[in-house]
Image (cartoon, rainbow, N blue to C red; front, side, top):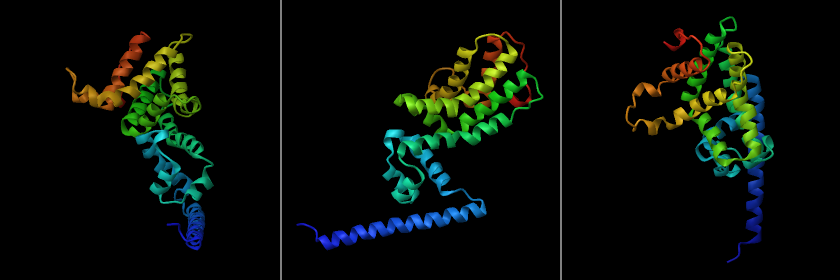
Length: 238
């Protein structure tokens, strides 16, 4: 049986008015948020998107899914982001922007290069241990193998720690090619916390192997042995 055209028209009008109302309310909330210092609607959407994309990957989340999860209309989402790809790329930038500043800010610029490296490794290890969503987002992109999104992950996520460590290694061992060592450090950290739940079933596993300071200490030993440096850990890893 066909629906009454008038009923269909009324339903469409109701949906249009409802979406317009949500957009209006969202705008008022954004204006209020700017005045009282609370996160904007845009940042709220990005924060809510992080665990969804971390759990299901880029292809597993639609704008409709996200609209329902955040309690905002699709029109509101598209007001802030022209499409899902734009939202996703902005989320990747958002998820690491404050973390990068925090990690770099933890390094004492007046300390020796070796101690600064230890401080950085310690902070980076703590970050990866405490933020499984961050790790999952990077690993999803490695699995999906999308060139544009991989480039964003490389430039917005990996480049900052890569550059800091590269500069420190150059101070410690000038003129050497550090690229392979850098890759070993970064992906040792990334993979360690992802594989730890499986590795605990293998012979020789100890609970301390999942502790960030144990991992950081091990990496520092590998790095200094590779560069043939004398190393004695500081209080940051004790």
